[in-house]
Image 1 (tube, rainbow, N blue to C red):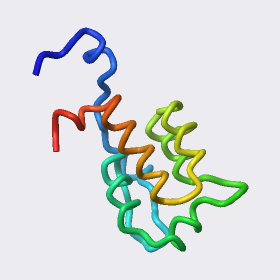
Image 2 (cartoon, rainbow, N blue to C red; image 1 turned 180 degrees about the vertical axis):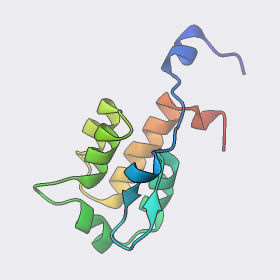
Image 3 (cartoon, helix red, strand yellow; image 1 turned 60 degrees about the vertical axis):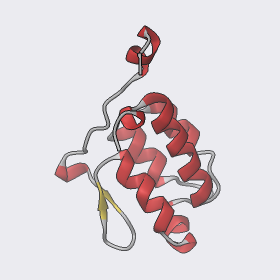
Image 4 (spheres, rainbow, N blue to C red; image 1 turned 60 degrees about the horizontal axis):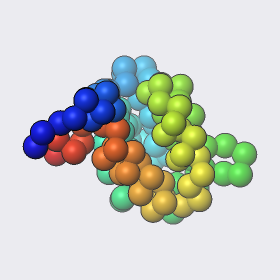
Length: 104
């Protein structure tokens, strides 16, 4: 695969949050990066998702913005009304902006 200059500019590394900034899921598990969040969204229950996302708060968006420093994804994922939609937004973002298209 030949990468264009635009591809190289768009790529961001998926980095791990520091141990004191991991995301604590309602069930006690922790997430340290976007890939782990993507995987968690695939398996969590609707009840678990709704614990973190209400009309007045969006914990995933806040964590992405404040810890992972990705304003665009934070804004996009804040529009999600269920875990499937949130996962789809996150998956698209990973494919468009992060190295996931080059790494498993």
